[in-house]
Image (cartoon, rainbow, N blue to C red; front, side):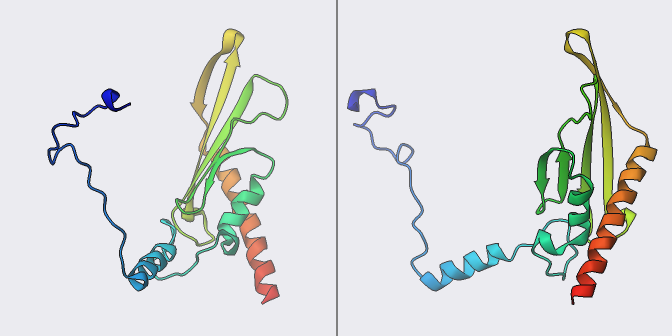
Length: 159
């Protein structure tokens, strides 16, 4: 195994030696560094708000609830994005895909952006994709806001 090495073992230059960084010896400093990482907020939350859990955000929960029948590829609360898989109700040659990008936690239509796409496939898997018009995206936004308001009202009644 020694003869198969990439480096010539007879030459030990500074370039051929990989230096490893040793961990911080002070335990208290390591704990403080870890706590700072845990306190990071989602990218799309407002500065000063301490909303760390997706289960506490009505606009996020409303979006998940509105899209519950559509399979999701990605739902990342930290980056504020939801992406669905291509979806078709029946076995037709048309399917849709929805992308939602959040910019704030407020329950209003300007807090997030919805983009949707329609894919039509014909024989031999030749597919074409188009961006759907704003009417479809606005309908999805309305449904999300409706669900988010219902969730916010339910949470307010509990408190």
